[in-house]
Image (cartoon, rainbow, N blue to C red; front, side):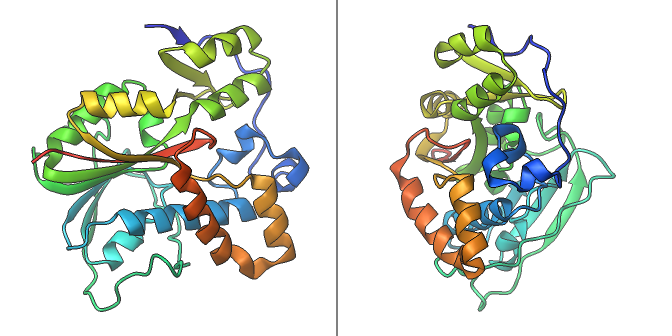
Length: 285
């Protein structure tokens, strides 16, 4: 197994989320784009897309869901509003969930006729799921790049498969190789970049000192299959560029819903053209 991208030290230091570079269309970079706490128009669009994708994925009948996406995830309220009981597993006791997204896209409405489900939050190991019984959840949400932060992704996926009931499903989001190569290029890691497209495992260092694991759609499909899950689909989270989104919303602030609708149609292409990949898989019955 070939590893690449984990050794070099970052050549630049991160900019604050509200820096001029983060707000400028012409200077949006991969490092800035992955900072989901940014208040930019692009991230409003990003989370609207994530919420719409979750709404389309949710089981038709209310069930029991496990959310491993962490405090930065902003779409959990969609599942609760649709009648599902959601257990949110937080890494630390002082983790505070981000403000929930209130925008509802017209093609992914919350079913108002249903009674909202229950939301519970507990502290636990989001990688090994210690203390979580087997085959107790109808669905697992592992969004917000959670599996890219767990470098031993294989072990984490095996645990997700374990806690799913037969027929249960998982929705996940990971960093793509496209994003990883962009970050390596920004840090002038040219030797590592030359090996990146053919690496079995691509570990990418970030300016803040963290390391994430990046995937192609083929690698992600293989990992899900090895975990005993049947892949339903793998798609890019967003296809529209950040500069396009920023430009459109600057000129037409009310165009967010239309942009989300366009994105959902474009993402069905399934190509590795996005900084993040989203996948759905099912545990065989």
